[in-house]
Image (cartoon, rainbow, N blue to C red; front, top):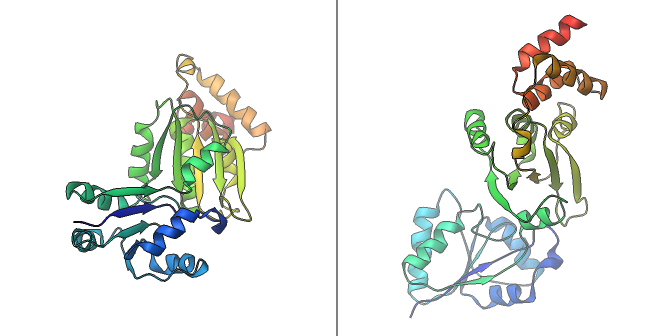
Length: 278
């Protein structure tokens, strides 16, 4: 008889969010498959849990996944954990869970915190229908292509983003989506938890060259509104729109970029007229 894989959610910041059932599960399994054993050992030490661990992450998942399946088939029980939140969500644990199902190994959930759901709940954005898009590529063309596919997505969109990539991502979102509403959530459940409700232009300006983002971010972006699609702008209207952004404090280049995203005209054409009028 095979063992069982337990998919165990871990705290996304505050250790008090770790459930009694999750603690009990980690204590009773034979071993733990962890995304980063250096991170998980801190959790285990805090709750005085002593269990053997093995690292299971993106770059070793093929070989290590086979090892875990073999041990499960031999009758051992395994707990799968990520560094934070629910495993198998934008995480290589997805492959291990699939392999268990393919091999007839039972999989049981021990649910815990999830950054994407927690962020959505406190974002103030529409939550009736949403889609999770995970991390965008660090490669600019790939990132832009991904966003272009979502340009007409009407559901609220949720993204994960690392701090060093945030400024470029916000600028790309502004160019592709136009100036929509966005909520940025960082440091969830931690001491410096922050929820910022603004627009894409405001966020792009906020995280310019002088501001260094800190902590992992969840981005909640407003979906496409079909009712706005039919409005046709003239180039003159686009320039006036850019002037309005400049009055609000945006530099000419950023104002032209935002107006271009709003109207469909090229940023260079708008910028040229802005400069000439000066």
